[in-house]
Image (tube, rainbow, N blue to C red; front, side, top):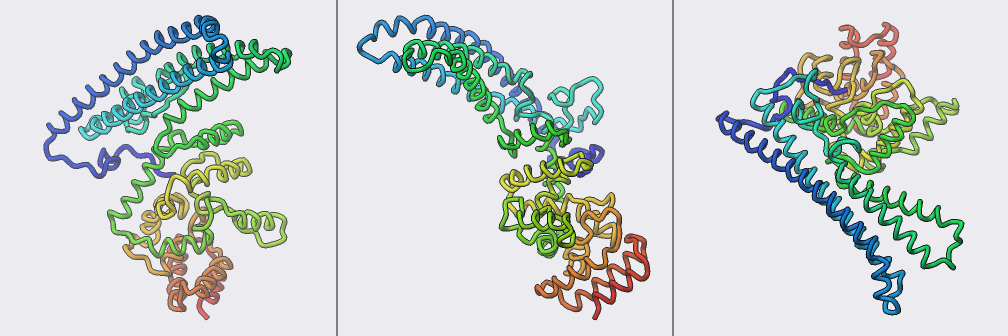
Length: 452
């Protein structure tokens, strides 16, 4: 996982910000807090107004429906009047929910800005929150702790409950009126089921509309469903996906800041880990099939996880023990990640985030671990060596795999004989320094396999 650290100061979290005059930042902070207070006041007043207006509208529609039908009798079909009344309450509900979702976004963004400015000014309430809740602006230590939608039983959802309860009551009434108007068409035994289903469907639709309007930058409706599935099958995921993605992108910027070229690393990453990376949407069915054949001992065992699945596992999944259930969540989240990020960005995040060795996350740490310093432009041998080490938590020398993969890379014109010689030296140095565990026979076999 990407290390959670709060000890490097605000520059670690907001690297693009710079100010020479602290007073300017302080004034900006004052403006941000006033804007936040103003947005919250607007939200509260609008909630009170909506409570009154929606109750009045609901009473009006229910109370005048019979009178309207009498007035327009023999002029407009009663079913059309029912449809018009339904359209009014539906339109009012959707417009109100959209308005409140926009207001909540304004509140959340103002709160995030306040937290950012507070951190820039050197104010932090610390990682351990004993008195102030860290998911509210009063105690938040990082901006993405302020969620656009914190939950169905928070103040953010109160407008939804007001609108939903009243509008559902009206929809139930109109459904009953419709059934009464069409007694000969529908069997009366199903009346209660139809009325109940209408109310349930409308409640679900309004809830989905409101929640969909409050999706964060990288959220999608299917992600909410996958999180629910993970909770149902007891697979623990990270709490704040937005923050994890932010930290992963920040790690990519650190590679750029140090002028680390990832061109060769990306080539070998795709070649070794996922040759179909650019053609699939996160799931390789061929790799899954090969993995199944390996389990059945029809073919040598091979991993079926794509690059995107590996990244999903690294960033978002806490529980690695329940492998079958975990694999289901990996397969579910992979297409979502493929949808929210360009393929090149996924490769950058992978190189900046995944485990290259036990306790060694990201290519920068891997370079420092093996060679002492970052290398600006890793050559073919160095790039192959690093990518081959990905997720090798036991630090073993996988002789047959290395020889087979390296020879395949040479056949594909990714490496030369000179590269293979240098690769053999890299492995020898890593074994001799104790970074990779191997017997002398294994190392000798590797050298013989690479150097012919």
